[in-house]
Image (cartoon, rainbow, N blue to C red; front, side, top):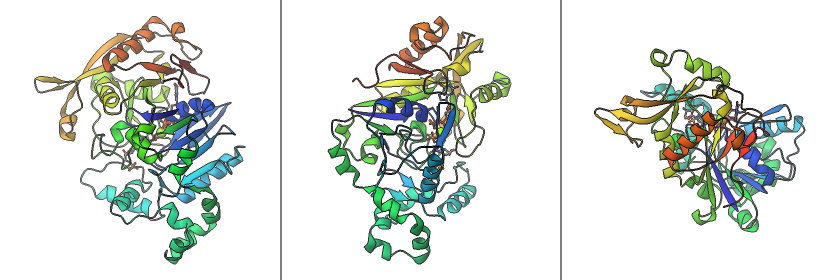
Length: 408
Ligand code: GDP
Ligand code: IMO
Ligand code: MG
C-alpha cells in the first residue's frame, strides 16, 4: 500500500512528526519534492531532529529512505545532515538512496537565489537555498542531475571547479544512486510512504503564485517525483495545523491583525514555537482558513486529514476560524487564482468556545473535551473530509488515531 503525506496549508504543518509516526509501520519513505528549503522536525525520546533533505523515516533502523526524482539536492548539505544524524547515533549507510534523475543544487545557486529575490518588485522571501534556481535550470534543460555526478563519462565533462566540489562526496553518492522506478517495482506490495515538503498553497501550480516555492508539493507530485504513475497511489493524507502559519511574503487572508485580534499572533507564535526550522524566521500566524483547507482537499484528492497542534489552543477562551472571503458584496468559498484578489479579501471569522484544559495527555478522540471535538467536527463538515489523526504535542507519542492509517 502507498500513502502520500502532504502539507495542506503553507508548509510547517507537522509533516515531519506525522511521517515519523506513520513510518513505524512503513518499509520505505520517499521524499518527492523540494530540497533543503524544507525543515521537518521530529521529537522522540527527548531528542529533537531537524531534517531538511533526509526523509523523516530515518530514525527507524530497518526503514529504507529515498530522495526522489522531484527533489533538488544540495549534496554538501545532504552529507552534512547525514553526519549530524550519525553523531546522534542514527546509522544511515545502506539505507539512504537517491534517485539518479534528481537534480542537484550547485554552490552558487544560493547567492543567485537571494540576489534574484531582492531584485523582484515584490520579493517572495525565499529561504535562500537555491531552490528556485535549481528548478528554473531544470525547466530550462540546463540543470545538473545526480546521474551526471556519478556517471564517469558525464562527470569528466564537468568544469574542474564542479568536480572539485563533488569529489569528497562522489563515491558515497554513487553507492546511493538508484533508478527509482525500478526500485519501486521491486518493492511492490510493501508499505511505502511518500513525504511531501512545503504545502499545497506553496505548490508551483496550485499555490498562491507567484508567492510559492518552485517544486510540486501537491499530492500529484508524489507520483512523478516518487517514481510511480498516478495509479500507484492508494491514499492521500493532508496535514494541517489547528491554526495557520506562513513564512515569507504573500497573501494570507486569515492572518491575525493587531487591530482586530490584539496580541493573538505573538501568543500563538510563542505557544506553538512558530519559528522557521530552516531560517529561524518568525512565522506569520492566523486563524485556521477553512476556505483554503477545502481547496487543498479538493485539488489533491485528500482522503483523510491529520490535524496537528490542537494543544496550542488549550488556553484559548474562544477560537476563531475563517469560513469565507468577503470580496466586494460577495462571499467567496473558494480560493481565487489572482493574488491581487486574494490580498484584498476580508476574512469571515466565526468563533467557537475553547476548552481551556491541557490536551497533551489525551490518546483517544473520546477523551477530548466536547469543545475540542466540536472544533474537529466543524472542520470535517466544512471541508467534507474526515480528520483521521489528531496531534496534541510534538512527541511521536502525543498522537490520537481515529482511523487506522494503513487501511484504505
Ligand atoms: P513540517 O515542515 O511540516 O515538518 O513542520 P515543522 O517541523 O517545520 O514545524 C512543525 C513544528 O510543530 C515542529 O516544531 C514540531 O515539533 C511541532 N509539532 C508538531 N506537531 C505538534 C503538535 O501537535 N503540538 C505541538 N505543540 N507541536 C507540534
Ligand atoms: P516545509 O517542508 C514553510 C516558503 C519560503 C518562501 C517560499 C519560496 O518545512 O513545510 P523557496 O526557498 O522554496 O524558493 O521559498 O516558500 N517555504 C516554506 N515555508 N515551510 C517550508 O517547507 C517552506 N519551503 C519554502 O518561506 O516564502
Ligand atoms: Mg517545516
